[in-house]
Length: 294
Ligand code: NAD
Picture (cartoon, rainbow, N blue to C red):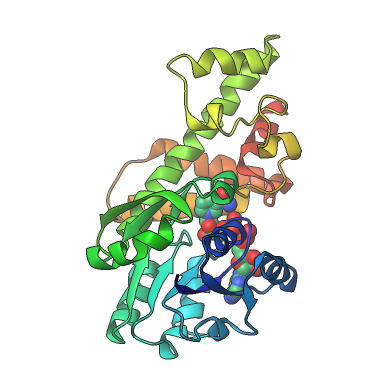
């Protein structure tokens, strides 16, 4: 079993760390929230007082943080973990950040002889809890293989998308598509409801038809259709609107950089921006249904 440092115990990182502990690893955690660290300690983790405190002989450091600036502060600038890390440590950053930021951290790590992969995840909080995430990795193939046994204890699959940063590109392509099909699913369900149809029956019909998609059959935005999704809990927890907006900003920047036309992605970004401004920033992204009910 490995010695693992885990940084960022939020909606996703908390259950991911918990699955590593359950798998028998020796996990030391750090988060800005004492409460979240205490929850991890109750699961069997050790708690560090600072980010650098997780390093202590760690073979792997996993980070699950909100954005690229925080990740760069952690590894390069403020906490400068790369300056304090043993070169045998493998860094796995699972945060969703710009591919440029991932490459910057990768290069800073490589300059110190430290291996790093970007390994953002697909799957929501439910998949994180169930250990069924999909990791989308960028980096050197050998490093991805070295990380695989650890990733597979938090997920069902680990893909190698390409070199450093490629995991982040594949991830935001996926999330741009996710935003588009969530909005489309909410639109279709609400139109049916406005016409007097039952959203459960609509879901059953479209799940068996060509409109079938993940937002419909696994993460339904209409309250009361499915159990265990944020729609059934006033859109609390899950994947926050502000994080989806961040991802759509990353997608738009990548579209500009690679000269890709993404009109649906651009529209999704604008709708999520308006939805966040309307007070839904800290609600799950399936709450976009509320915008369509007004
Ligand atoms: P979250 O806001 O719930 O958790 C982030 C955690 O990081 C918080 O607990 C916060 O205290 C901690 N943190 C922030 N700065 C820190 C620092 N400097 N040092 C230590 N801890 C720090 O976010 P989340 O939903 O867990 O998402 C994390 C990442 O995963 C994001 O990049 C997000 O885009 C991505 N993601 C989220 C989902 C989802 O469904 N929530 C799905 C896929 C990917």
